[in-house]
Image (tube, helix red, strand yellow):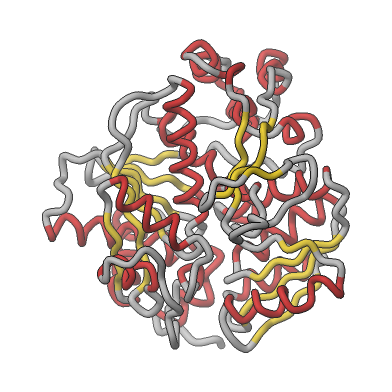
Length: 415
């Protein structure tokens, strides 16, 4: 499943970039279904503040011929990353992309279980899956003529936003908790972003952005506060289905802080079915949280349609430290519709799985990715899944971005 990524793009591969693109029909509220004009920059629904979906006229991409043209193209088409799915992305990303080579990450089979695959998102630029969403969001921000953006982040989105803003020539203002991994802080400063470390959580960072954005002239690029980060993240759904031969796995394990990746993949499955690119039953979606910050897991256990603020949130998996996800209603709906579940695990369980996969599989997972591998073992133990089920586990970032955090967990101290 690990595909070779060459350094050049052939004329045959360039043909994909120039293939017909779907026009954006409109933006649609995920809650009340109101429609908004996509020719202007939009944030959330003007009627109910729901997150927005991008809706296309997909007629040009319908049928397996378009799908097969992706898979049957020369092998070096993999060098195009997310651009292999231009047929289901905004035309601006084809014509004037802000790209650093994001997407088409490896699907690695486990050495111990032939039915387990790990989607290695640490292979993306800036070392995490956040590159996908920020590539699309920053492409559209530049298209709309936006000059300043602001992002509250638990860490990795801040680094990705800083990188893609630098590539787009856009001024970036990043707000992160002061205890995010050092790598996140270093990359923000290296990319030239304006970084503010906040004594609090991502929710406190979001409040600062909301309070200041109008006066400062910032466009709010927060999770689910604009529609195009979902479009970048949905490519994970297209990739995992293509990499499994255009078939669904039985389950997808997704570390869930803000949950945009899970939401995006579900949108991808919906689109692929409408296009005739995949058949069969969609996978069970498994949302994984840390026990120290588990608003979705608590809402799931209480059979609630939305979460409530998780007080005193604390976990070494900083990407899961989101005390009140904006898209909680979507995450819970998707898990229910898929027949999936929500799992909350202790930091001790997560760290044990991180060490297990490093020593037994040769993979240095992020703490968030280790939450997914730990959840797989947990659900085998409960009988929710069996070893015969084919599953995809998401490692959302490289463990190398967490060396200071992991060092402390290992008992190491600075010299």
